[in-house]
Image (cartoon, rainbow, N blue to C red; front, side):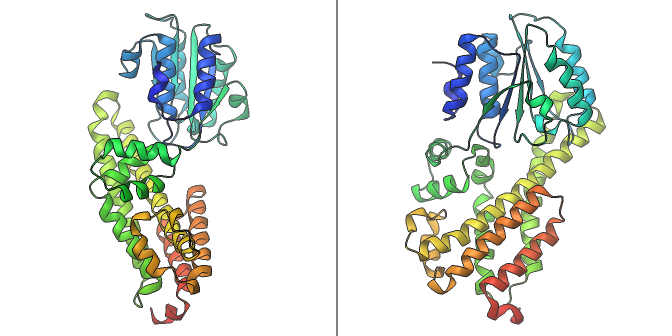
Length: 361
């Protein structure tokens, strides 16, 4: 048994890391893949094995493990300068020093250039682990100097097992639906299992149905409802971040940056997750209409889906699903006005799914 046993699935990443421990580690690693699939957990497990003190490393209490997390929207050059100062101190207790860089994909240009110098000529005792949700923003010069460790989305089974362990009181149909909605990401638990989650989900699915059922459906009000739910989620994330500020010893400016990042990040995550649920609803109309009920994501709502999944609505539902996915891609990639983007989406959904009701709205 080793520290990697706590990391769900990820057989390829574990194979690479165990081989590195057996053969001797490289000077730098790049853990990359979607958020919420175990990259940070695996990084700490790797650090624990490298240092040889699992308990203190996992408790973030070992002096030879340095963790860098961005404060604002980027990792800036001052953050890397602090790391570089520490990098040239010899280990306090262990034979190595391990450096964990969370959110490495947010390195700005100056910070990346400064980090590159230490990736080219690191001290012999240092192992650097960069953790990134995506490779695209990282310069090729950084990527090429690291050993890559890829991470994948988790299987539905793994997410389901984790859900059952966290919330054994949930009905099996609810567990199946939430595991599918999580999309292979365990970090979605905070959203799916929090007390207000069921209420938000119910309201969102009512919106999805009102698009084609309610003659008085208002796209602008629908957009406001989704935005308000995201803002509520962001406010809660900010309050949680406030409770965690004491351990960082930040200036007021940096503390404000950290709180705003937590709030904006949670709002954005909630918006994207809401769009994924909308897309899943319209997808479920298609799969149930074609007789593939077992593949439905909202499996705990099959009776309602069956009522709405008519053959006449099949093609429109398929196009509606693609419209929502397109809106997700645009919001994820571009700095759009979320309220306007969502209102536009609901207008297009209405025209697609209920053209006979458009002029009655």
